[in-house]
Image (tube, rainbow, N blue to C red; front, side, top):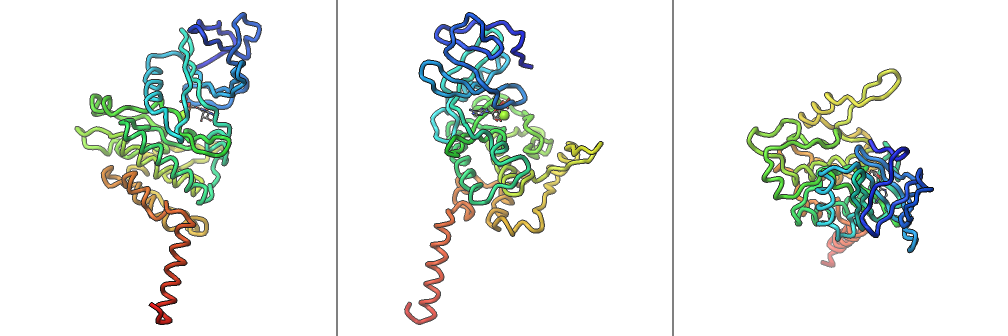
Length: 321
Ligand SMILES: Nc1ncnc2c1ncn2[C@@H]1O[C@H](COP(=O)(O)OP(=O)(O)O)[C@@H](O)[C@H]1O
Ligand SMILES: [Mg+2]
């Protein structure tokens, strides 16, 4: 657990100075000023920061220093040049803390921006989905699998451009092959069936298929407002996730769409989700196929097609064609 209050200032590499909010009187020269707390994950705290000379804003992710942080940093450096991937500007490792200095995504995560348990209108969800696929295609081509796709790890910049983030669970192809068979401890709602024991003993869990599965869960979550296999129990007036029931539902591919969902989402979206949420990893639509699915066609493009088709039918009826 990260605590700043009683921590002593870490020794930083030359050129980098971090000032903690609770250590403002420290003798450390301030070049990065951590201001407010903007997010937290299972292993990190994220702060907004201002670079004192340029006044440029950043997000700084602070982790306890561990050897596995280097894996996250190296992977992030390897996939750092895509418009839909959050940029890692620099990093600092001290004896105690590791700081990842990243571009600030001022609208925060999808969850934060659109609200927990809230539906995202299909036209907007579609623009996000397109950008997430683009980022994943780039990553997969570079041999890196994200393995923790979820609402909290999809960030939005000030103009609502998608920035995929958090490569703490990511793995590169070479490591993946060496480590088979392996399982992935991803977020329960996004867990894939093969990760829950539905994988033949000797085969290994492939990050590419895991990412495809999570995309299906994510699109469902965006459009329906909750995850497809989610099951909550009411205990002491609190709604708690029932993990065992959730995992059983994933293993059985037991999900349904709300009966009135066609009032706010298209049948194309349902078709796409059904083609990604397949128990057999190899049946899941590839990223390239996803991009050409009718759901992904721009509305305007689709409307134009409809108009052309209707005109053609009309002209045929009148005997002009
Ligand atoms: N670059 C960023 N800009 C704005 N907010 C961020 C940024 N990076 C992370 N966050 C916020 O911090 C949260 C946790 O960051 P994340 O990298 O996912 O940590 P963890 O690896 O612990 O899950 C995110 O869900 C998001 O709300
Ligand atoms: Mg995260």
